[in-house]
Amino acid sequence: MASIHRMHSALSALDGAPVWLNSEPLTAEGLRGHVVLVDFWTYSCINWLRTLPYVSAWAERYRDDGLVIVGAHAPEFGFEHDLDNVRRATGELGVAYPVAIDNDFSIWQSFGNRYWPAVYLVDGDGRVRYRHFGEEAYEETERAIQQLLGVDGDTVRVTADGLAEAADWATLRSPETYLGAARGERSRSHADGLRLNDWTLAGEWSVGPEAAVLDAAPGSVAYRFAARDVNLVLAPPASGAPVAFAVRLDGQPPGEDRGLDTDASGEGTVAEARMYQLVRQRGPVGERTFEITFDAAGVRAYVFTFG
Image (cartoon, rainbow, N blue to C red; front, side):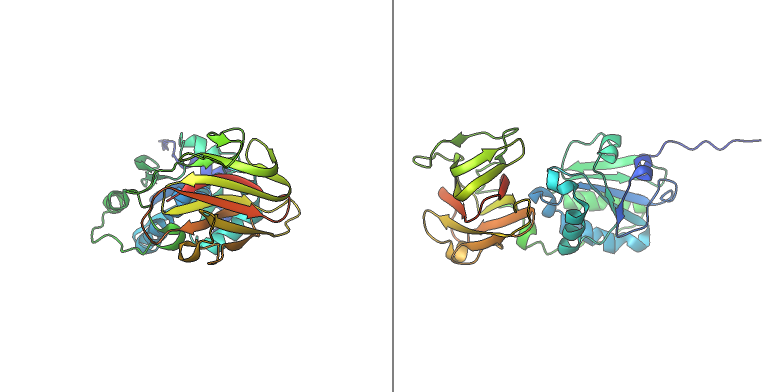
């Protein structure tokens, strides 16, 4: 009797995913014959958020041509291990394609992945045929999708605004900056004389591996930055109680330079664990001092990102 040899599929790790959102569990065998785009993401990551409109557009455009998109959610921070948080973020962000929860990084490791975001295109025989790490290269990625599907045509037109608007790379001079002890750098003991990309905590804080936690209110974080956008990943206290904050730019309310999560007076609230867009400048970009002050203890601050 002749035996049928089945090659190992790059998608085999999907078989062990414990939880799926937006879909019944998908398997490597069930996906045989389909082109599969595996998108590694974690919901508080600004670099992934900027790619989401494109991935969503590809899911809709090429579904009938045989493309299946799988979002492998691999958490960066502790709160991203919480299924309720991921489920809420999936709904709020409009992620409609199947999502595999990869809390133990088994799918991540099976691809040898090292980045958020990362896209892998797998052909109908389970072989990785294309990969891209980070943002951009949207046309290149879509052409690779078309080639594997055997279709052609114009690439999708995408409106990427709000959280998803591309960074203003020409003026961006501030890097991703972690506040936790494991990866924190460039912190100063006080706000006087902060140099570009220096930051400091004021008040009573405890700095753990992942985050700085406010022990007693009020407390603030200041950062000397050069970028259009200031984003900060924040989480409320363990009790879940919302915490009000106030943002200042060079000591003044942000006005029209407010972000999506602040009003013109700089007021906002940390009510859930996620990334908060606190500043989006409308005018020329230069060095400025950002400060955020919290009015209750327990709030957690993880990482600044800029755009």
